[in-house]
Image 1 (cartoon, rainbow, N blue to C red):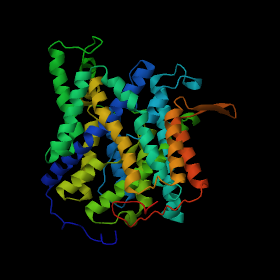
Image 2 (image 1 turned 45 degrees about the vertical axis):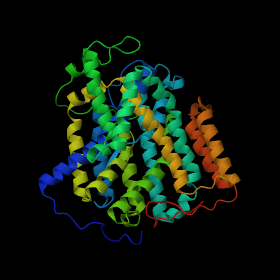
Image 3 (image 1 turned 90 degrees about the horizontal axis):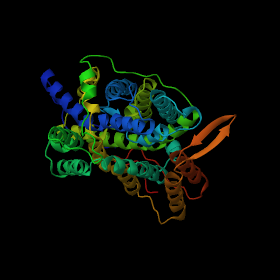
Image 4 (image 1 turned 135 degrees about the horizontal axis):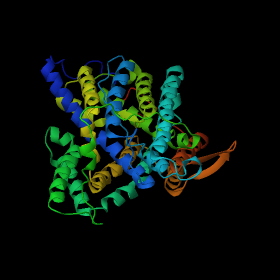
Length: 458
């Protein structure tokens, strides 16, 4: 990125009206994916516990956390980096696992309390980011990233997506025609969409299919099991203005061990996003304000979100696309989008409408999103030229895949009288990091000066 010392485009003078329009565009770009995370998580907990989440991991809390988290990130990065932070899909596997815990303290636990323990794990995952930022500031990024090369993080990301695949199929099976229509809509807008529509295929799939579901429900169509496609009860009871239903997190070692290891994979996603934003804007944000500051901002935003019952945050690729399309890189526009998200979070009626989203539509959207998580892991391996013809790399990837997908129930053991469960993803992360550290031939070198890439050939 040595050649990226000045903006790709000359500064654009923006009126307040133009800034507002551009901010709305940024908000809608992140909107579809950000609100889908709490919808999916609420589904996990409802299916596992038989009751709805009423506090914490809801649409309104998630929007609030995305807005405040983005502002926290901008403060940590000296108001220089035009990044928007939305809810992370990488942690969905952790939420699903904790939702289905039914032993020890989790047996017969209230659904809101169980979700609070999951959020406690999110807080610690954010602290992992912060700890990594401190280490990078102290010893340098190259030494740290040697323990987290793409041969470890790539397969980990693949496992995260594949572990969620059965959930997408189960949700879609509620009403396959609706689910398939959602899949088709997303594909059409993603491949053949133009302008802004191409940037928001997920949002378009959700909006169009929800409208279609309303008409189908009105016409008397039902799901496969005979249930109504949409249940409107929650909308009537919701007020127009009110604070999001925050829920303070709880801490338990088992939940922490579920969530914290995921940070190893999402940090690589963060680094990739910082490289992409730097290449788009034409400034080396990894060098200035520095990767330690961007990781600090992401970590503080994630820990803040978990503290009040929200999902983990992450920098959003959708908004990088908006930057590239508009060629407006003013961070003030992104901060205005964050403020708009906060304002929207205090409208409970809006959150109630979103919560009525049919399960089959969620399943159809998830069909693509979960697969894309795994595809991103494959891309991470390919773009970083990981040589799988080498025995050490093949062994590391193989062990991660088997651990991540094979230990479905995880491993449970006692530590000082406390029951601790290592999930499949946690086992996979620990195994991958350990093997990478002890097997000879680790030639991975992280290079912070390469735009659009995070490593030299492995």
